[in-house]
Length: 97
Image (cartoon, rainbow, N blue to C red; front, top):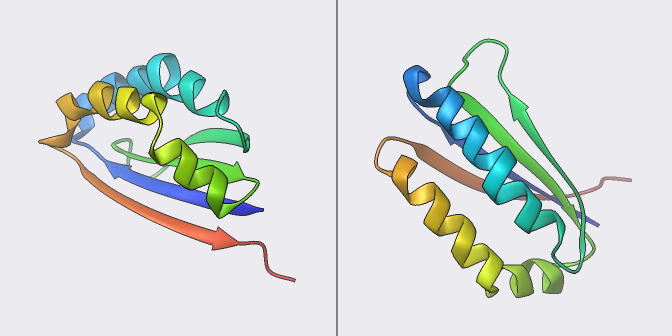
């Protein structure tokens, strides 16, 4: 299993828009992808404009297939409106132990 963390920072005044966009448009597409085990959207307690999409995938192949999919392109399309005012960082982790 691979856990993938996408850290997104948006201006506080766009936080509600970012949350709505992810929950209504992006997360439903991601969780339907083959190999996607789970997806959570976390909001920072200290900074309301900071979010983490935390997804668990069966394998690197599943992530790569998702990244080449129409769903990923759709997610990118939905999030482009925020991209000019946000910072996005993607990291992948293996479960230790």
